[in-house]
Length: 119
Image (tube, rainbow, N blue to C red):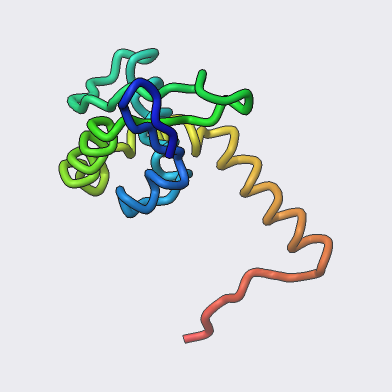
């Protein structure tokens, strides 16, 4: 935590403890909001702005109010609300095809055949 002009700013590691979510989850929230804006997908949530100008490492910092907003976001987002992003961006068809091909290559390389039920 850093104090600047009487205002407290929390690093992402400190925020993860307060929000009770991992850093990667919080980053996905912001990536999903950015992806929604780029693609015109509705994103009915408001995420607080963070700062990256506090140190030379571009660490993300949130104000106390920002942390409270993240907690409200955490409590309002429902399972599946961000699936437009995770399915559309993170698991794009090319990514699914690459994973499928990797599985096939592995099976061929190691002589593994599909198991067939004999019932």
